[in-house]
Image (tube, rainbow, N blue to C red; front, side, top):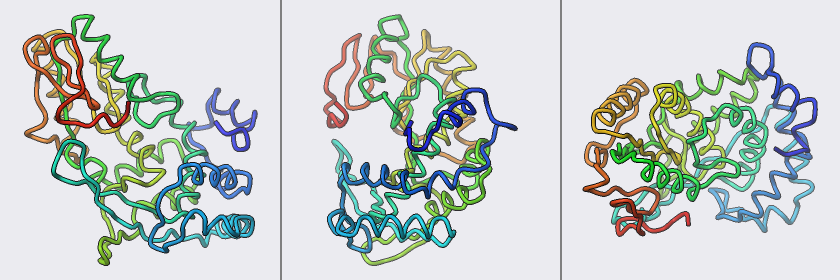
Length: 315
C-alpha cells in the first residue's frame, strides 16, 4: 500500500469494512498530485515503449511537473480521455504463434498505475491464497513451490487447464459488475470502462473492442484477477487445491474421481462466465505416469524440469 494514498483512516476502514461493503469516494485519491508522482515514478522505473502518440518516457519527463499538474486537473474536472492503445505482436514462449500486446501511452500508463494503487488493496484483501499472478509479494516461484509441495503430499491427479484467449475474451459487463461489488464511485467506474473500451490501433487500422482487457495495460492484471476471483473462491469452498497464476492454473487432486469432478466444476463456471477452455490444451494427468507443464516447468514423477515447450519466463 502506498502511504501517500492509503492513510491510517483508510486502512482502518479497510480493516473493519465500509458501509455496504462498497467504497464510494476514491477518484480524489487518483487525481491527487502525490499519487500521480508515485505513479510516474513506477512508470519511469518500468520503462516501456511509446504509445500511439509516440511520446517516450524521456519526452514526458522533460516537462514532468507541468504535465502532472495538467493531468491532475483534467482528472479532477472529469475531462480526461484515454488515447488509443497501440497493438504489437510478440512470440509466445516455445511456440510459433504470437500473442497481442497492447501499449498505452505514457500518460495513460500513469493514470492506470494511480488507479491500480488506489484499488488494489480493496480487492487484494479478499483474494484467496492460491492465486499468485501479479500480486504483491507473490510470484511464479511461490506457485511452483505450492504445486511441488502438493505433489509430494500425494496429489497426483492434475487438472491442467487452459483458458483460450482469456485476456481478449473477458466480458466487459460481467467484469464491471464484479468491480462494482466493492466500488461505487461513478468516476472510477467510468475511468475503468474508458480503458476497457478505448480504440486499439493495429498496423494502422483502428477498432473498438467489445470484450477483453489489453495485455500490456497496467490495470489489466488486476482486472483479470478480479474477474477470476469468484472461481478461486468456488474451488476453495469445494475443497479443491487450485494453484493459479493469472489465467494459467492447475488443480491437484488425490484421485481421478476428484479430478473429474474438479474439471466439471471448472467447465460449468467457465461456460457461465462466457469464457472457453482450450479443448486441446485442457487435460487430466496422472503425474505418476504422465507429465504436465506449468509456468515454464514440466512436472513428471515427483520432479520438475525446465519445459521444452515453454521458455523460463518468470524464474
